[in-house]
Amino acid sequence: MTKGKYVAHKGDFDLTDWTLDTFEDMAEEHWKPLLLKALAELLEIAVKEKVHAYLPSDWNFGDPPEDGRGGPAVADPLIIYVGLPIAQEEGEQGAFWSFDFRELVRDSIAGSESPDDGHIDGEQRKQFEDLLVELGALMEEVRAALARPKLPPIKKKRTFKT
Image (tube, rainbow, N blue to C red; front, side, top):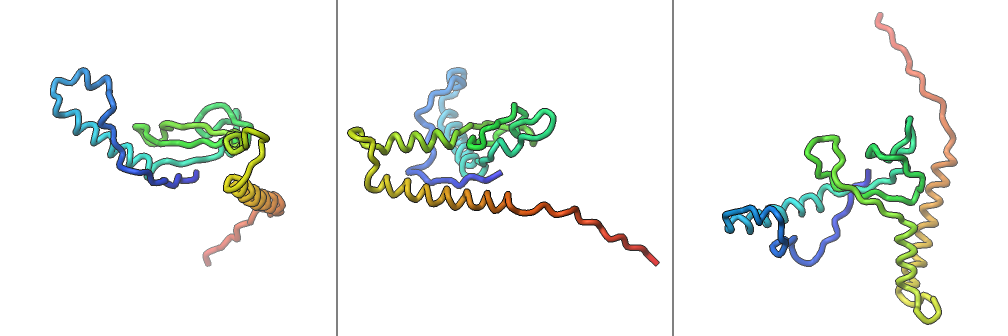
C-alpha cells in the first residue's frame, strides 16, 4: 500500500463548531471544548500519518478473488482505494473510499473546457500536456515490467556438515 502524503491546509483542524449528538447527553458543558480539541488532534494524527492508497485490482486473486478488504473483486484497474485505518483491532479495515481515476480526469477536463467551444487554454492546457507526459512514462514502466522474463525458481544449495 502507498502511504498518503499529507497536503497542508490553512489553519489547524478545528471542530469547535461541530454539533455532536453525544453532547446533548452531557451534563457538564465545560467538557465539550476539551473533547472537541482531543477529537481534532486524533483526526490530525489519523490524516497526517495513517492515510494510504492502493489499487484493489492488485487483490484480484484467490478463490473467490477480492478487493483486499474482504469485498468483491474490483476488475477496473483505474479504481483507487484510499483508506484511513481507524479500526479498533489490528487487521480490521477502518474507513475506505473508492475513487475512479478515469472519472477524476474526466471531471478535470470538463472543468477546464471553455463553455463556448470546449477548447482548453493556458495553464490548464499545460496541466493536461504534463499529465499526458507523466501517464506515457508510467505506461512505459508498466510495459517494461510486463516484458521482464519469468525466471526459473532458484534452487537452494544443500550444505552438509562434515
